[in-house]
View: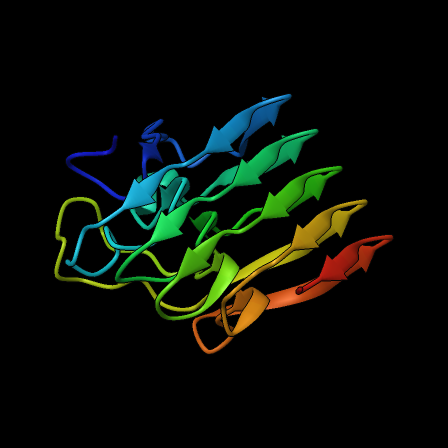
Length: 169
């Protein structure tokens, strides 16, 4: 459980050279995780949260053949996932079932960053090429929406949702 940051799994791969890296999760299962944090940014992402620090922004994230089932974000956004980077996000052949949050969606994309050395300083609006969600299943999502991209903070050039099933019963 992410006791010092957000979500149940929070990774911090610091990239001080600002070079693009790719973080891949293949055949991973996120089941019955809970984020009960109340403090902003740490309260986002029930199962997985990444980004928000300037030194993490240049990370592209890929989830392939993953399962996100019954994850909860009690006081924030993103019942399953919350991402805040300025590189591509790819979700391929993933299952999102019964993920809940209190404010937004199953998948939350923020794109906001703080200066790692001056945490009170927010970095100006950033851009991302593509969010691609392909061959995914969204089942019984009890949130406002399945996917939330906060475009007042980040400019997204392309959002591709291909061959996905949305079943909210």
